[in-house]
Image (cartoon, rainbow, N blue to C red):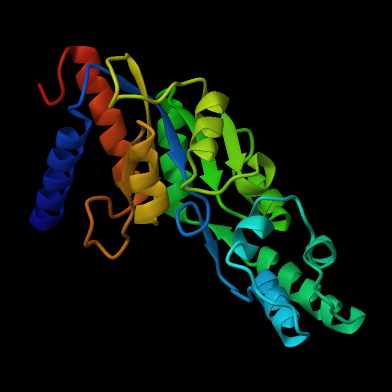
Length: 244
């Protein structure tokens, strides 16, 4: 219990030091999807397997293949057609079966469900920003429906850490990021399991970015803790100062 309290106090101090960049209050929180709010229990990687089918049939792989896949609303068949991948109907059906099983295995992390509920109870706007292929979008919406905003790479046409996708979720949540570039009263915080996409990328466009590390080595070890820190920072702001 003492050790847990000490970890919370350390995280609170780190969170406090991070947000002391201007007079603002966090009014919106953005979550990454997979690895953060959602757990993909059966990882079969059907789109990756499709790319391998292309290589096997003589297609030269491109460094942009993954970006193109995740930036367009394509099914497996669409992807094969657009990328010029020759795949037999039997193999394509097997890949589709793998995709269906993978999507069916998606579950929400309990701390994610609780964190979203805590934040919404405090009138914090909540959104999801994620790199994903089109078939996974419905599962995200089913697990977390009716949030205040969504930015999926296949809809936006850009992947994290491209600034375009962060701007898209900011617009959806009606909060303009920019604490690094001037004073404002509202701010967005993003959290996810990728340092590059969920911490550094958001910070580069003026959002607050935090890295989720459920192993306990990072500042944010679970999403309930993160939500509580956001709520504490908001209450501190409303009282006239963080931690008073």
